Image 1 (cartoon, helix red, strand yellow):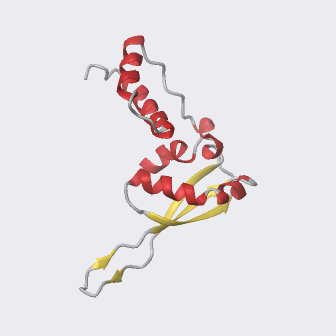
Image 2 (cartoon, helix red, strand yellow; image 1 turned 90 degrees about the horizontal axis):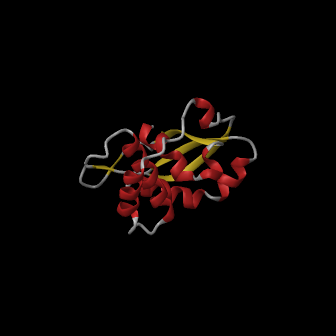
Length: 141
C-alpha cells in the first residue's frame, strides 16, 4: 500500500466516501511468464474497508472508482476492487487538520495557475495541494 494513495484517498473517492472508507491492501496475482520468458504485468485487486451500509453504495461506484485509482497512478494498477465491511475511523478524528488559509497574493497566484484546469476533481486536488504548499511558506518559487 502506498502512503500516497492513502493521502490522496479523499480526492479519489470524494466527500461521500472519504470518511467511511479507506484502502487496505493490494493483492497482486502470481507472476506469469510470457512466451519470451519475461515477467508480464497483471493488475492487482485493491481491498477497501468501508463502514456499514456505505459499502453497498461504494460497490455501485466501483467502475468509476477503478478508473479514478488507475488515473491517479497513471496506469492500469488495479482491475478489481474487493470491499470489506468494517468500521472506518473518520479522518478528521485521526488528527488530520484542514489546510491553513493562504494570504491574498498567494491565493491570486494559485487561482492564476489553475485557471486552465477544467476538470473539477483535478482542480480541487490541485487547489488543496497548492494551498498546502503556499501555507507552508514556499510561495517564493
